[in-house]
Length: 354
Image (cartoon, rainbow, N blue to C red; front, side, top):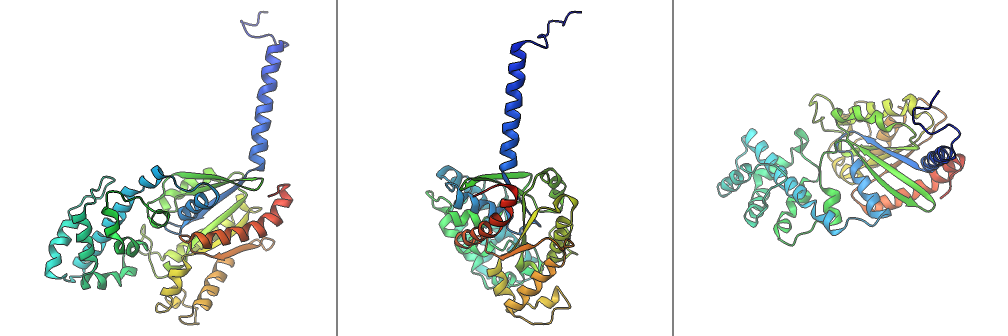
């Protein structure tokens, strides 16, 4: 019978084509096998995306001029949103502002939050005036009672800098800016002879259903915890404590069947904010069994143990690091320690080297 116009099975051209395809597939598999895949997990606002940005700064060429300029609308959004939240909370609590600031507050509340905020000098001056109002300062001290980014003060303090026409966001601006992660973002970089692929996914409950698509062939998980959120509630569910949610999620992740042979690194993040908060806000409010008072070292040790106790695999060590994700020098040191410990021990078993 005829071959319906197809290439004969023994045709040299077909054999060569098949051989090339096989070689390409083997080459792709070799690349994937040698690639170190780091999956960043954690609840929303735990610092995952900030860690990914740090890898771009530390191990790549950082952010170029155009990339930095692209963050300008997000900076404007962060400033105005923070001001609007504080004004709304003041009104909700019937905390009066100074008479001269009522007009400034009204101006700010009329701004539509979008990617196209026209951040003028007039708007910046209004932010400065409102942020300096005693009523707003009083509301800010109550921020544990509502949802406010922990970078709010950073952007409000510096709000006059952003309206200058030549303004280009700095690396620190980019690290401090808050934009909710949706979908999956990857950062690829090399350390020595090894290729790393860091995968960042959204931490909100609505985003977690997408995580399953990232589980295959993961070499290491970096789970980020926001230490200073022990007295805060979830944005998605105001009845759930953020640290309780994080603990449960950590247990679910590390005990998942997909990750029994995966290295786990725990980033206890925002330790600077935690160190300041724990001076006045007792951890006992989050963990009734805690009894060591407002002591940073004891509180940090207690939280660390709460996370380590979630591990049901006695043969696996979990590496912990207290971090400040917005501090490039700190993350550089921490990641260097990870290279020295994890890469030396675990990559040898994988036949990889750095």
